[in-house]
Image (cartoon, rainbow, N blue to C red; front, side, top):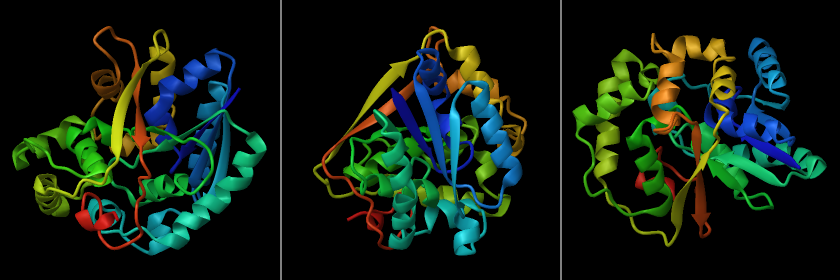
Amino acid sequence: MTTVYVSPHLDDAAFSCAAGIVSRRAAGQRVVVITVFSEGEPAREVEDRQALARVGAEAIHLGLPDSPLRLGIAPTFRDLMLDQPLRPETIEAVAAGLRPHLAQLGPAEIWWPLGIGGHIDHRSVFAASRRLPGSPRYYEDRPYAFVPAFVALRHLELRGGHLHAPPTIDELSAQIDAGGCAAFFTPEERAGCVATLHQRLAQARPARGHSLRAIPHRHPGHGPAALALVQAYPSQLGWLMSGISAEALWRRWAFDADGEPFERELAIRGDIDDAPGVGGYGSPRDTA
């Protein structure tokens, strides 16, 4: 049995699905991680191959340029997460790059990012998943999913509706810090971005007739190996954690009360699609 994880960048699948990857390998399954946006980072490609090889997983790098290179934008939260519309040509390039690999591998399962956090590359990969055959399964994008408000925004974006009790600006800011996502913001933009996120959390959206259901998957006994896989990406953890222990962060958010790792699958019912119009993460204009 072959399982494929589609990873927007050279750490996303490992950060999001480490326990699933190591538990499937322990069960004798073939695991292949296909990274979409990997151009121009040879050192990180080596890091990714070595990290996955340690647990017996395979790596495929499509070599597409990520958004700062592709779009000529700054790697800031506002430019990457808030203000970028989806582009049909990017979605098709992702789908075209994946098609031959998926056809050759014939996986029993394909896991895709849901797009939590709103990164334009993650959302582009999600949109490509809706254009390819098969029964996609969706994982929560970590560490973005360690911020409850980011999860709520993505759910609102995809299914519509409203939050009964959106967090205050101070609560949202505290969630970002506690979820290990402070490094995604420049000091100059943080206050404005948090205010925009707060505003979008308070907006009601038309119900879209779709549903998302969170399904927890426990992977007992695989905690140490999962943590080791996460920690095998020091190039990213170094700047991302900003002095926070990666182990402490994952144990807080990705382990249950019994100390076992878990991951949440998001089951989608209905023809959810990210429309390539204008708007950014969490904006009502971003979906059709």
